[in-house]
Length: 171
Image (tube, rainbow, N blue to C red; front, top):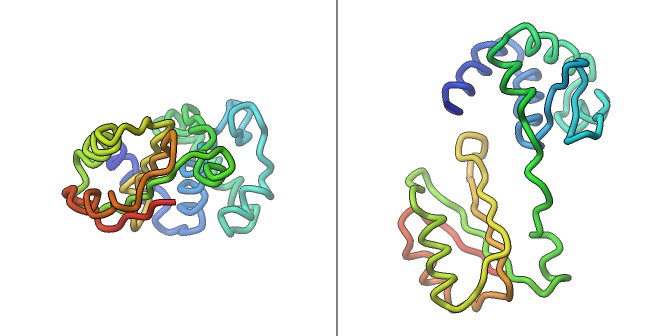
């Protein structure tokens, strides 16, 4: 479904790379298009200027992108139902005495989350949060696991044995 949607977005905006950047940024940040034609993050209205800055486009591109999305029922249904993913604890994990395992994945990434979670739990460590970047949106997608306590660097070799894992950072 998501791959087909990306094809539709690319087809709809193929002559307008700035509009593609707006659509991608909306999905990346969990921004939805409300019935009032405004963009929201949850219930917080996002200004056209703020989104334009984030997407590195002129703010007039925001309005034209919204108009095209609203005129296409399938795209509008997608964008009106986006919700933000919530707080990622990665940047504050150290302050909370939590661990972070960041795993870059290749194109063959099926089962990495399960294998990673299994390895962590086998070592007696609980998982607080897992966040996987969309493999269609990111050139080098990563899986971020926040753990109840810091993970030993000795496990890096074990993580690298998991099929599809290309790089591991533990901090």
